[in-house]
Image 1 (cartoon, rainbow, N blue to C red):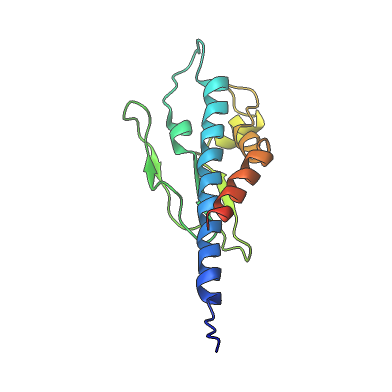
Image 2 (image 1 turned 135 degrees about the vertical axis):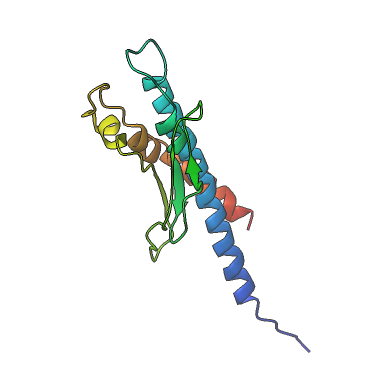
Length: 144
C-alpha cells in the first residue's frame, strides 16, 4: 500500500519565498554598489560645495509590488531628507528596483547637474554586477 501526499503548495510557497529572498539580497547588494560608486566619485576630495550625504542616504531598493526598503532618510549631519511612499510596479515576474527620489539625482547620474559630471551610480549598480546577482539568486533558490 502506498500513501501519496501532494506537497505542491508547500514547494511553490518555498520557491516564492526563496525568490523574494534572492531579490532582497540582490537589492541590498545593488544598493551597496550604488553607494560605493557615488561615494568614490562625489564624496571624496575637496569640493567647492557642501556634501550632505542626502543623496547617498536616499538610495534604496524595492521588490515588485512592495514599498521601498527604507521609509525615510536624512543627510549625514541631520540635514533635511525625505521619505518614500507608494510601491514598486507590481510586475507579473517579480523584479527588484534600485533608485532614489532625490530631485537632483538624475543630474548626477546623467551629468547634467551643475556641480558634477556624470556619475552612473544607479546604472553601474544595476548592470555592472550581473554574475554576482545571478549567484545570489542561485544561492537563494538552492537554500529553498
